[in-house]
Amino acid sequence: MKEFLAKYFIKTNIWVALCFAGMLAFFQLALYELNFYVLGIVFFGTIAVYNFTRIKTLKEFLELNSENRPQILLTYIGLVCALACLILRGFELKTFLYLAVLGFVSFCYNLPFSNLGLRAIPFLKLFLIAFVWAGSSVGLLLVVHHSVIQYQLLFFSVFFFVIGITIPFDIRDQITDEPDLKTIPQTIGLKSSKILAVTSLILSGSLFYLEFDNWNLFACSWIFTLLISVYLVINSSEKRSEFYYSFWTESCSLLPLLFYLALNLF
Image 1: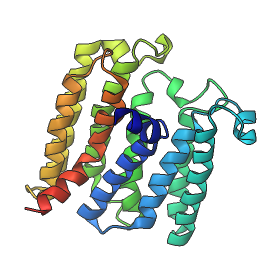
Image 2: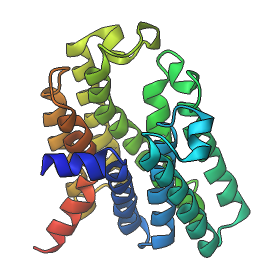
Image 3: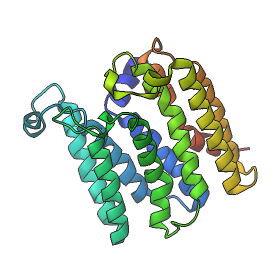
Image 4: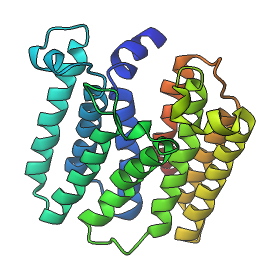
């Protein structure tokens, strides 16, 4: 089962796209209503961006003839499907511009065909990921529904949540990452990195509760997710398997939706 998931979901980046879309669906249910066009943009856009950054050369991308052929095909499929959802939904100009900025930042995070990218700037990697994920979930919904001045605490709750669950990936990569990258674990060490991650998750829970000011199903689902996230952070190390991070830790983004759906059954 692990081999199947690793080959067809993790390596293709379908799993991370599914988890990302799941988190967006959770906030759609919490704030407004499900919109499958918006979910499609995020799901297929994530597939396109994540697979595109795995391609090594422009020639490889254009010729469709390399060991990365699945990633190239998924990039094309993701782009076409995301654009189709975008056109069918019929967004306003400001939403197009907002999505363009997020797409540009995501593209520049790890520029393909080069060793450049925003992730190479010391200390910036973690915060860029958190900004894009918060901006593509809560931020996107606020722009679409003309509610930009609302739910600021919720935006930062997601921001700190992503920081908390991303630090374990830096713990995993601290040996292979270039020293000049200066990730959190490289700079402050393993123990302090875990403390920072747990602190970020606690801050996320506090901001989430303050936004709603009551223990509704959404707040409970978020807190349950944070508890599992804390457990995964505490037990993370560079010796853990790739599956521990790419499947279980990545799954934290999907957990709020799963908990919410489960709690609704009782």
